Amino acid sequence: MMICHDLYLLDALVVEAKQLTKHGKVADYIPALKLAKADALSAAIYQGQATCAEAGNVEETFTLQSISKVLTLALALMESGEEAVFSKVGMEPTGDPFNSMIKLETHSPSKPLNPMINAGALAVTSMLKGADVEERLARLLGFIRNLTGNSEINYNEVVAESEYDTAHLNRSLCYFMKQHGVIDEPVEQLLELYTKQCAIEMNCKDLAKIGYVIANEGKAAETGKEIIPLSVSRVIKTFMVTCGMYNASGEFAIRVGIPAKSGVSGGIMASVPHGPGIGIYGPALDDKGNSIAGMHLLEAISKTWNLSIF
Image 1 (cartoon, one colour):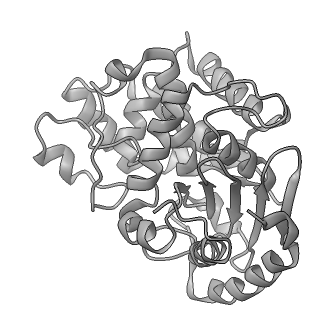
Image 2: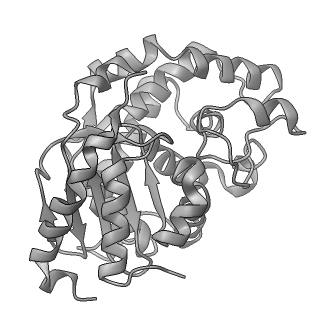
């Protein structure tokens, strides 16, 4: 894989993809996200030891939003095991929007179809261990800091508060699942943890490092130490392929063919098995909630360096 020897190419790909930002729209259903610059686009590629390629303002921070679903799933699987986690959430893709309630009402038993939709992510977050919100969040932050090697990573309080205050649909999902025994903790407590989880903030380089660990069987680049068990890294990569890009996941698998997860802040994390981790940020979104320029950029990266797993 010659990515590190073709650094100028990433700059060119970012310049090309950035033209698409004018066709997207910054997320506005969470008021704090409206402040993002719609024409921003940056990318980092990490292959171990150091970021080997970067383009755009890779130091600009953004909140993980739905990318955090991958990390809470990994932590829940590590803490409770597959049997416990998948007794509360399924493993099947859905063609519905990420915040849809339809399948909860029509599917029997009434549990979320997968951990990458909001209902499933809320169910997974409810399984995180700890005495209270502070302890559970601290465990998650510690896990993420370990994955990135960055002890400064924290959550954005303004975004978390904005998200909590407008989380009406997520409240509905929680109450429905509470009625059906999928979650058993107080709804407001779960929403506080979930919105802080989604508001965890980092830059493209940090995100690429997490992608690298997931790609390489859960092992840290610098030390080779296992952070995520092999069995767990395989599970989360599979979900990234089948469900990671909302209801565009099937087309994405064909066009790009890399395990990836997006968030409505405009972030995309990609993990090329036994290869690099990729972090992208472009807050202008398409109609499915994915970064419009980021999707094009990741497709171009995949084709340029032949990264598809298929």
